[in-house]
Image (cartoon, rainbow, N blue to C red; front, side):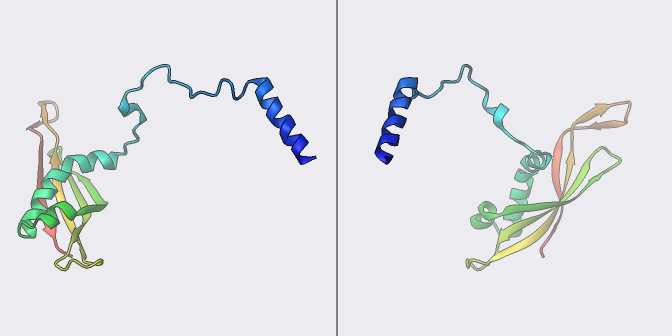
Amino acid sequence: MKKVIVFFAIILMFATGNLVYAKPLEPNEIKPYAEDWYVTPEDIILDIIFPAIDKRVIKEYGGKEASGFGWQQRRIVNIVYNNNHSYDISLKIQVPGQNNGPIGYREDLVKVRVSPSCDSPKIGCSHGFSVEVLDYEHK
């Protein structure tokens, strides 16, 4: 009985043409790569401040390449808007420690000031774009 059911199922597939026209569908248009991205405001902030933090981490840990390449962002702790149209961003980062063991990480706190370029007499702002590390605390 089972053989008869399998036989009729195969015949039905060939009769309806499901296997005859089995080819992958081709997209009608090519989408730009950026359309499929999902980017958060945190991703944008981190892309802007990473180079400044990179330089400071290497400076704090004596120019060791492992510290420069091995640090990771943990989370943004605070963002403060200043009267001079800049933002102070505090975030925690994880840096490889002195020992190279599996738990050899330190968590540091970094405060960065981001000043977007601004030239407006209406709001009293005249400065170029800059990113500077204000404070670095070892935890």
